[in-house]
Image 1 (spheres, rainbow, N blue to C red):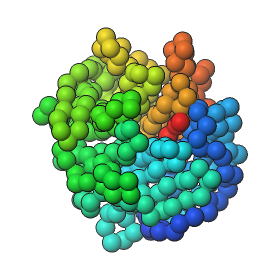
Image 2: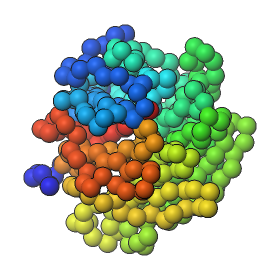
Image 3: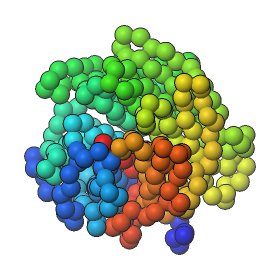
Length: 335
């Protein structure tokens, strides 16, 4: 199930929108606070954000809804907090990189001028999570160093950025996850060589690091992106994996779990089509949902069932995404 004319991602550009109650073209409103619901956001070739909702019964909106006006998107992440989809996007409208925060309310209306942390230089990557109802945003700077900022009051104002430890490693990719209802921020870290994944748990007050594991079970492969979600008390991690020795080899998506007894080891996710480029994952109900984009503009989704550890038989193309010429970034957030 491949498409012709493979297209590698090129950054697409952004003009900021700051409108409360922004309408979304193409998608009907769907309840965001029902357990098992997930919301997905990505970018298209024209540089616009595209958003859709997957209901708890597995039905998707028939088409993606466009949030126009965003170009040069260079980082994208989202999380659902109290039934509202919070999206952080890094963009450039011609005057340099900016950080935007969009909120999709439970009734389907949008606020595109929500609070953001203090201004920083452009990030390589962003990842947001909710910790006991408080947003925590992690950024990876140009040098491969992560830092985090958290909401510190009831009005959504963020505190200052603070460093996230890496055990001395330069990083290639990061993913944030909350640990239950505690105040602990969990950051999954992929080393710059793509070979190792570690976990840092903590906050401004102190950290526990380590728990490093190979990103794949094959020494001839390395990971390019990492995603994470806390699902039913366990940390689940996915990464996009490529060959170090054969540039023509088709990339794949791998998955591993960190439980009380340690890492399960990473294994290839079944039923993955195309050439994966970017991956995202979330807890939705008791299961894990995973979305990925492909180098030629595909957008796919699959589910891992917590009850027995089984995967959906094959990843499926997200309805409404065909012929959208989607870009590389994707984020999925669940309830």
